Length: 148
Image (spheres, rainbow, N blue to C red):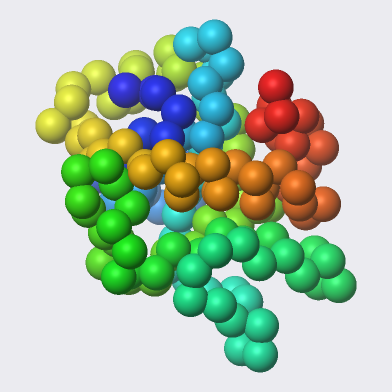
């Protein structure tokens, strides 16, 4: 379930900060010895200034402390040929770590509590990790984890 590059769909996903639970995709960026994982919650919310927008790939705007990996909805992102329905954004400042035991306690049943949506294509996953690892807007401890 928590292999690196796996995209999981939770319906609903319970946020750490207590925000209202809602359906969310979850990308496993790094699995640390099956104890903790580093993950991203992609969003369709576009916070990139209009003049800087890109269709796909990494954007780094140090002047406003913004890092984002953009995935166009016309790109097959998984090895099984799936695409996101909307242009999707993965923001560097929004990645976080999660305890695997805690996630397994909250979401015990596959295809009921969550669905393994697919495994991200390797070339896209490598580009995503490189984008996050090289960004100053990603917390130093997370950049270190992504480098190990």
